[in-house]
Image (cartoon, rainbow, N blue to C red; front, side, top):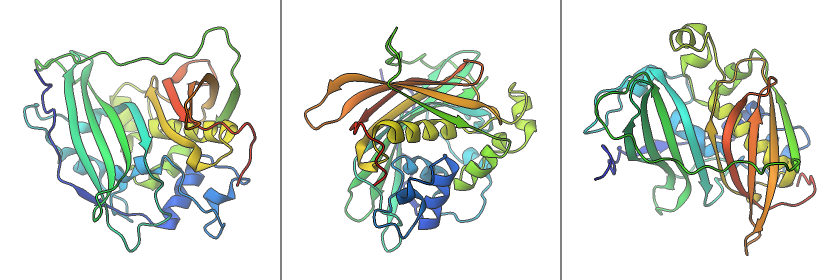
Length: 309
């Protein structure tokens, strides 16, 4: 028996971006000044950071601020109760990069294709919605990236749906020193900068939503932590070369608050594929040692040096 909503496809939506959007994203996730190919549009190797496609379902074609709640409330999945997406948080995301995005979408048409994998009832804690989102060249049909996402709607379970399958875990190796470590120091404005990419959830801008959801106030976007960890892994082991990242995933384990210091510990697993990509595992913790990103895994071409193109 398939899960409720499984296979339901939402209407395709056009997405677009400018070089300015690419530069903003790079700055907002902590790209460093010695990685100019992500920060300077006239660099001969100017590139889109490979996880940028995750912001496009939020941004679509907008260049102006949008009403996050209104856009979320417009979403309905057949066979599933009407759920309040204002009380939603990220669960886990896995990105597969099939082809790098061009620095701008100008002159071309790209679209977001979004389908439901399943909707799962976790009882009193809430409901999990799993989707697959693809960024596609609308004319050629070529797929540039795919993202498997799970979102958690807090306190909205108990409607009689299936509990859903258990997810596969990728724990870090026990008793082994990390091969690399990357540290990000957030500040009180980190979330305010990141939201300008197009993710205008008030949870990350004003304390009232977070207080109602039990977080005590503002929390930083889970995707900030996710994207900054991806940057750390590519910088520390992949020479900051966007072509060296094929897959990246992590589970959002606990909230990150403004001012938290995030440390990502990174391990090479030693299983190199014939095409040169190898499995990387990682975990991200805050200054108190609490895990904020778990189940971290990537497929990366390891360079062994910090070349910056």
